[in-house]
Amino acid sequence: MPVTFSSREIADADERCSRGVSVRIKSVNIAFGGRTVLENFDVEISAGEFVAIVGRSGCGKSTLLRSVVGLETPQNGTISVGNVGEHNGKPDVRVMFQDSRLLPWRRILPNVMLGLEPALIPQARKVLAQVGLAERANDWPATLSGGQRQRVALARALVHDPNLLLLDEPLGSLDALTRIEMQQLIEDVWRSRGFTAMLVTHDVAEAVSLADRVILIEGGRVALDEVVNIPRPRTHGSARFAALEKRILGRVLQRRPVVEDKW
Amino acid sequence: MNQGQKKSTTTTQLRPSVLAKQALPWVLPISLLIVWQWASSAGILPSRFLPSPRAVVSSFIELSISGELWMHVRVSTLRALSGFVVGGGVGLLLGLLTASMHWAEILLDTTIQMVRNIPPLALIPLVILWFGIDESAKLFLVALGVFFPVYINTFHGIRSVDRGLLEMGRTYGLSGWPLYREIILPGALPSILVGVRFSLGLMWVILIVAETISARSGIGYMTMNAREFMQTDVMVVGILLYAILGKLADLLAKGLERYWLRWNPAYQTAR
Image (cartoon, rainbow over all chains, first blue to last red; front, top):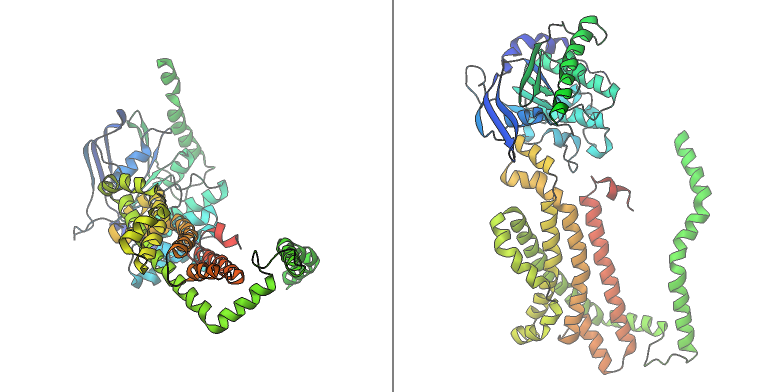
């Protein structure tokens, strides 16, 4: 189902741009059982930016995301998420995981309402309508498809009006068509709401099509930090798109022989 | 419309085989009943050994009209349920505690696992010594027997709550009681209900033995009392009552499962 945003919402984008917060990651070290995952890791993300983080399996990209929301604690270094606006309010950070992590024992609307006051039901219904699932509000999660569940998970995050949205391979287990639809949806809400987004993905094409900047993590450090200067909406077929995708993919794959030489 | 029509034709086609399927489980018990009645009327089965089915039915009717039967059923059910509430409640609370707090597990679990291996019925001589043949003796035995299945399954249920959901809950700011209410308890519920179902079966077993050995009322007492007067028909009524009450308890547990776990496709299709 195509998702449309009213022109008012798109027009609001400018005044909402202040919603995003900056993220500053400085000299972060994370190790699990003696194996270093992130080493002296530095990255700065400005408010409202969409950053994609790519890298091979086990390179620490998920760990980075998890440490931003406090699910992992770095051995040393600092991670600071900027304050919101002039009130210096605590920023709202939400995560979308690879699996939807909906509560199977709650119907769809209560899932979206998780941790919210009952007074916000109209708000939750509105967001559910934005992701195109208004009529499924009273269904059990088990009756939804994988893509629909991820849309509910997105709605659950969005109803909090996050300042920073962390996406941990949220589209990894979806089929190709649903993926494209979801990418479109995520780009649309990001543009209309202006939060900061960090997307971890295996898929370089996905990174290039969504992000302002693609960061490659390798050996626990930033190996590549590439600004994507392609105007939106981006088309997968365009020559610039293809060239950039090829360059980043080439860089991701490049290190393999070196690792094998060490053995 | 079209779909509805299609459905009705398939049910008419299936009807004979569905009927046969529903009748099949009852073929054996009904034939046994017929053989039993025949053996009694023919004098092959003496009534001091086993009464005829007809005698059992008539004594059931007699006992229920006089009200004696219901008095005993009420007393037994009350005992069973109060023992279940006490034992199950304590099992649930301790299970929640030991599964949630590491210090509680270290402090209590070893002891509980040791006590668990003592059959509650082995305690009957001591229990009679402590409580006499009072209500509290039966309550204690039932509560003790019911405690362990609830405790173990609560513990297991909480320990196997999906880590991913817990993590998600924390990122949504849930902790303490809200985290319990939204994620931990519903996640542990399927396992807790297994414990409850197991306990309900155990509850009757323990109560029967306790009432048979020492009681002044209840189904067990009625059965034992009938033995003194060789009233085999009353004895069989008592035994059948336990079967019916046990089945009712199981139906109740199944009903709870179907209601509380209706989100789970495994319980939606199970009929």
